[in-house]
Image (tube, rainbow, N blue to C red; front, top):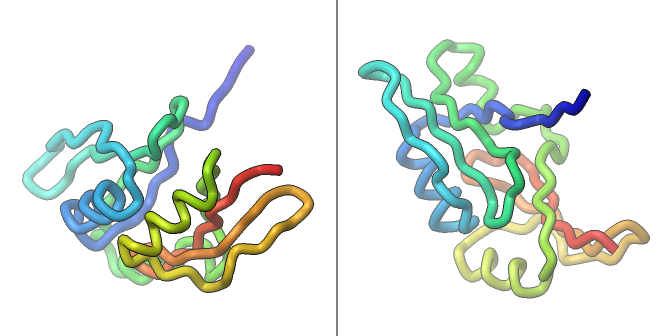
Length: 129
């Protein structure tokens, strides 16, 4: 038996705003944008070179969902973006306006820096050691 985590739901305020941020700022690929109804879409984005996993962008449409946008992991780092070229990606992301919360640091497991996405969720950009 084999299993794989294929998608993680990621709450957003607006599909187009989130697509633009993930594709233009982070350089993700838009894998799919399929209308499901007048208000719902099936939108998947993934970093370049991803091997199957992606974020499923979902517009928050209830009060609890809207309250969770930007707080999906309670203020902790909840997303981990691996890279094979930390310095280049860090520089590109800074130039695109990504807000890093710390200077890059070298840990035993990786070079890492925490950044915030457009809603304030925290991510690690990291290059494994």
